Image 1 (cartoon, rainbow, N blue to C red):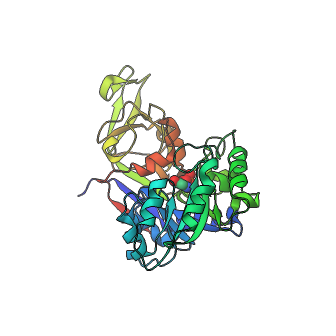
Image 2 (image 1 turned 60 degrees about the vertical axis):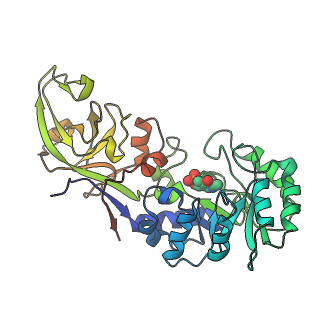
Image 3 (image 1 turned 30 degrees about the vertical axis):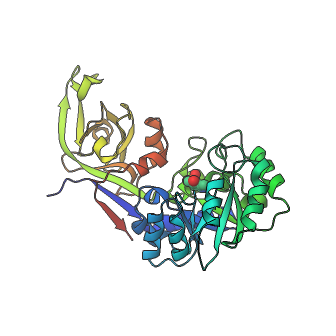
Length: 369
Ligand SMILES: *Cc1c(COP(=O)(O)O)cnc(C)c1O
């Protein structure tokens, strides 16, 4: 019998969350961002739930090839553009749209031989200081690109650093608007946080939004808001079973480093999930977890293949949790109880994005249609 751990991808929830992003986007088209293998879900597994998107945005050429292999004939955008000149051949062959964020990428385009001119998204660095031309250099980059026979349509994009927080997006919007105001072409500025928090403004919705985490039910501004507030559903469940139960007495300790000491008699369950499955080792005692759909907590250190859970709330409720009981690390239990991935991420000092992306190779994954 295989180890009882299993991740499940919820197709209906992906569909629901995409619809939710669409509501926020108004009449703008929606890129489904599927970088990092669809935020750990698997591009092939997520595709069925996301195929109603207007386009797919990714990073790797290999991800773009996989989307074409799935039969997707609509737009695909490479968010960071190409990494070397020969990548442009694949862009031509697969009709990929690509970001242009630096002079080298323009040089490569200028030297590229193609029958089919490319659609490009000229990236502005409006304050994030990762990729893109700063406002002062943006127009000259645009002028260079528009003179190239290899380019047919130029769109404009920028990325927000603080759409999820108090600083907001006004300063970046102002820089972007000022530099692009009179330039002809489509615009894309919003990530998930901007779609949820700032898209009352038509300039923020623009022509395309780039929805990532929201599709996967993660909340960009957690804990200020939660998934119930934004109407999002979990798209990934990580579940396992109890391998053993230990009855502890006062003073007994649990796991490596004996970091948890039982204050009195209590039962703990030992679940078949550890950091080698992608569950964060940083989760301290008290991290939320569901056992047979009942919310309880982890106790002691997470080890490579196992972690311990407190069975006290189940005993109090008269529930006979034991070997084989279902443990939901995040997502939806088979009884329907939900443990948002953000709750677990917060305990681990990270964000839901990282936990999804870190689901380990060794965990088998099922798709629930
Ligand atoms: C990852 C990414 C997004 C999506 O971000 P979310 O916060 O997941 O919505 C949008 N735009 C760019 C350029 C990105 O790299």
